[in-house]
Length: 386
Image (spheres, rainbow, N blue to C red):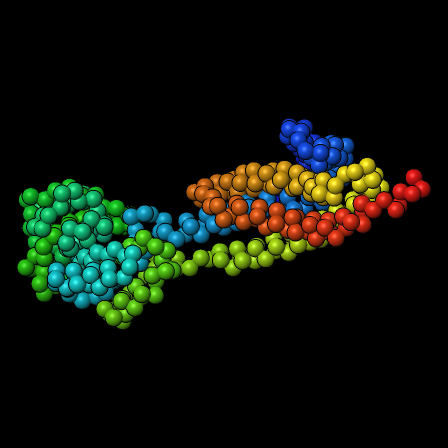
C-alpha cells in the first residue's frame, strides 16, 4: 500500500500542466498563474506531494477501519440476533410472551422467546423441540403462514419424539406424537448449523408441563448499533434472571475506535508538518519572484490580481493532487476491503474528512504568508536599478 501511495508523487508534475491547459483562459490572474504552472510544474508541486500521500493514506485506512467496524456491528449471519439470553427453568407461553415484551420496551429492539427441548435420536446433530408463538419461531425458522396451533418440522422428524430429560447423560423422558398436520419449516442462522431434524410447536403440549427445557432462549435483535442499547438490554436480562447466560453475539463497541483516533491524530500531525513545508515553499517562491511581481505592479497590475495569481498557483496543484488522492485512496481502500473479505463500503466522512483537512490547511498557510507579504513583494523601490 505504501508503494502504491508513494507512486502518486511522480504523477503530479505531469498532471498539473495538463489541468492548466484544460481549464479555459479567463482573468489576468489565471493567465499569469497558468503560465507559471506550465513553465515550472515541478516547483509548483514539490510541497504538495506529502499532502497528497497523507490524504490518500488516510482515506484508504479510515475506509478500511470503518467498513470493518460496520461489518462487526452485526453477527456473521443476518438471521442471528445481536444478543441471546439463555435461562434455565420452566416457562409457560404467557411467561415467554411477557419476557419478550420486557425486552421490546427498549427502543429499537425486537425479541422472541422459545422453550428449547433436546430430543433423543441418532445422528451427529442434536435434535430439538422448539415451543413458542409464531413471531418467536419466525426468528429461528421460515414458518410461512404461521398461526396459533400450527406445528412444523425441519427435516425428517418421524412420527414420535422423545424428550431428553438428562442433566448430563441422555435420559428418556415423555414421548409425544408429532402432529399429523405439520408443515415444512427451514431453520435459519446458527440454529440451522447446529441442529438436526427438529420440531416447532406454537402451543405447549400438556405432557411437557412438568418437564424442564434445556433452555428458555430469548433472541434480541436491534435496528441500532448494539453499543447504543447494550446497557439497557443487559439491565432487562438481569431483572429477568441475574444468573441467566447472556451472550452478546454482535460486538457492543467499535474495536477499531482507538486505531481510528490514532490515525486521525497521526494524519493531522503529518498534514501540519506538510503545511509548514508549504508555508516555507510559498514564502520562497514569493521571494524568488519578487522582481517579477514588482514589475507587474509597476506596469499597473492591481494587488488583487497578484494575490489571486499566487493563490491560483497553489490552489490548482492542490485540487489536482487531492483529486488524485481521492481516486487512489478509494481504490486502495476498496482493494484492502476486498483482501480482508469485507463489504466494499465508503462513507462521506471517511473520504471528505481528510480532503477538507488537507485543503483547509493549504488555504490557511497560503493566506497566512501571502497577505502580509504582498505589499512588500509588490514594492517598486527594488527596481530603481533595473
